[in-house]
Image 1: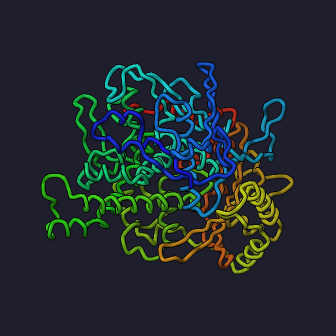
Image 2: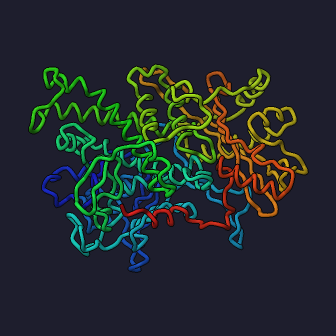
Image 3: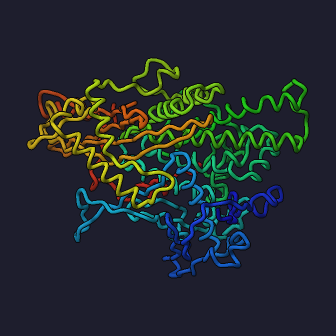
Length: 613
């Protein structure tokens, strides 16, 4: 591992006497042997060009003896080379978290190949080895992941004169120095590598999920810095539902942009009129209160953080009883050093487990049109597969937190755990046998020790094998059971709807290897399949798909997580068909905009329009 110094939160806390000695942290990131100045490694390439000032800053060499022996450069808002070190360190830590939870090397989304006219060449994608990071790309209050450039672009701006907390009014605020913002944007890129269709806004939850999940990763990475956790446990006397930095995101950015508080918070908010902080109280109307991605995503973040707090309280209850002679009521004043240390250890452990649950669930999501309810089912199913006995109530805590905020999955009879688990696929023994034979011919050598380019090539080759197998005449019944229309030379429209059914796409075949707390390991094959229907005459598009999870111990399909395309529309006339299509698309979230109908940089616009409260 390589040890590097970073800001635990951001530079604004450097001048807070209460945070003295806590905001600077030394973290360990995976060691890269061939790390060039930049830094430029296997996963990342930091390019420090500032277009606004027409400057190019010298790249930092983290292998220089003077830097290497001092655990990197000292944290500094004034040193561009430290900015380079900061974005590299936090991004690499985020990548490592994903790889550990999923049991395989992380890959970025493939870059579409374009012709001389700038048009995307269908079926031609290029491997992307490195994600580029530009620490000083924008002179504005923004930072975003560009799927078009395959890069993270961080902005900087001048702090506003009012309510800037510890930041000097008019001073430069760098997004590249916020631990939370770096982790958030890196998560966008990692999520896009897993689920590229999650950029399609087929329902209000899709972009909100992207934002919420990035916030969840950033929040729980706070708990990987022991000094920061211990400090906040002492500050809150162990009650993480009080105002604290562990449950807030981008404090400096929020104050410097005139928000009177952190950019976002999972536990409460400050009233801009009174300056008083109050704890958020969940209601069943939270989920449907807003369609704006950040506001809706905040509900999911709040639910996950509430589940974490419930689990943490249950695990630390015995410590509180021991410290209070069984009363459970702590005496006034600061808690003891020993108790604070034990509570901090429990908080860090639970945060690690909850974040692993959230990341592992990504392999159990449908490939298109994800909803918060789908994500709850994915969390429950993925965790139950790994830990069958929930003796500490982790899954109950998640179900309760989602229910309290009005997040309910569709097509389930109850909110009980066994009802939320994805259903076993209704495949015949012949189909299971055929599927098992198809899996046996795949190359599944993709793990934490794999070469990333070889893993990408293997995944693409496996996708072609699976697709060629699926379109064979013998698999047509299986294809229909998955919710697809079999391919033909003359694709037929859906019932009552003029248009054309496109060929099926197998765009991801990846293994998932995990180890349970008891030491048992499990391995799944994750296959994502989609199909598109192009309707005439308005050229509306309807995307359906399914995620097939195959148990690699038995080579049998465990789950087929479907978003039905077949039967989404049906009527007697084209006019009626379009009406039915619009209604059902709104109900099921199957419709999405054509590429020319929306900006090619959805996250740039999304973050620029972030709510300021």
